[in-house]
Each structure stands twice: as C-alpha cells, then as structure tokens.
Length: 235
Image (cartoon, rainbow, N blue to C red; front, side, top):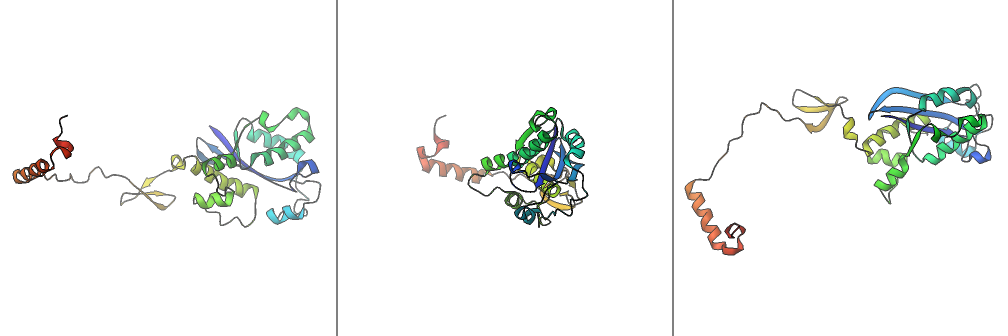
C-alpha cells in the first residue's frame, strides 16, 4: 500500500483570485513504513505573495524568482503521486490549488482525484477528537510528535510531521521497530520504550497451596455466609 502525505504553500487563500502554489512537499509511506522517498519543489508563481501568506510560510517573491514554474514540474510531480493514496490535512484547500494549476496547463490532466485516492486527515482527526483543536500543531502535541523546528509553515516539513501524526493517529504501534536491549527493555531509535519483552529464561514462580487447616477455616467462613455466598449455591 503506497501513500503520499502531501502539503503545499501558496501565494494566498483562493485560486479563484489568481493565487498560485509556491511549494510542494511529499513524503512516501509504503505498508505503514516511512521511506526515504520524498518530493520537494519550490515554484515560481509569476505573481506577488500576499502579506498574510508570507507571514505564515516566510517564502518571498525574490526567493522564488529563479525557481521553475508549475508547468516545468507538473509531469514529474504527477508521476510521483500517480496511483497513490494522498493524505492531506484539509484536503480541499491543497487539492483545489492543484486542480487549478493542472487546469491552467491542459484539460487532459483532469483532476488530482483522477490519478489518486484522497484522504483528508483533518476530517479523520475531527471524528476521532470532536470538539478539540485538530490543526497540525495541536495534533503534534496530542500524539507527542516533536515539532520544535516548525517556526514557520513549510510544505516538506509539514508533510513529514503530518506523516508521523497520521501513523500514530491510525494505529502507529504498527510502525514501531523494536530492538531489545541487554536489560530486556525495548528500544526505538535509541530511546528506551516502556514496552518490555518477557524473558523466557526467567525462573519458574513458586506456587504456595493452602494447607488442611487453612482449607477448613475457609470452609467455615463460607458456611457462615450461607446462601449469600455464591460458592454455596447449587450450580
């Protein structure tokens, strides 16, 4: 099963107002394992970036001046995501921009959903945690994903964080690769896990059985309880 966790950054909020994609970041998951296969591209939008958008991601018009246009990277990008399940936080936003970019190139591309299955992790989070904050920062805190590097939004960084959150939110223990240390403690990435493996060579536990006197005292106690004691009732 191949999944691509995807995020974009844009010049503004609405493609209908001429706003464009300026960054795409993708992280690959295969059979619930993060691979090292990623896609990352900055894009020249041929327009100014809204001040509000710049405050979010810190990507300037000047920085993008020498970057390729979407038309230059479309084929490689679509080849990377083709046939995969796209996991996107607030998918309508990113997919809306991607569909807009494809439509500006050639109708033959169709829509992203023609090439990929789309899963909205925000919808999943809202169902799992109703009435709570479910933005990426809140989910990182809830699932103990370190987002200390996230001073500003960035497509690749946000995709990496979302991939970790998604795996934990959907049953992340399946992704743990545990190694047993000398003391029997399991480790993950050098960190000691609270999970400990059972030592098959440990000594057999002693079983201490009640003696005759203790059994007689126990029966006397049951007799005093009478029918109130379930052990005295006929089966």
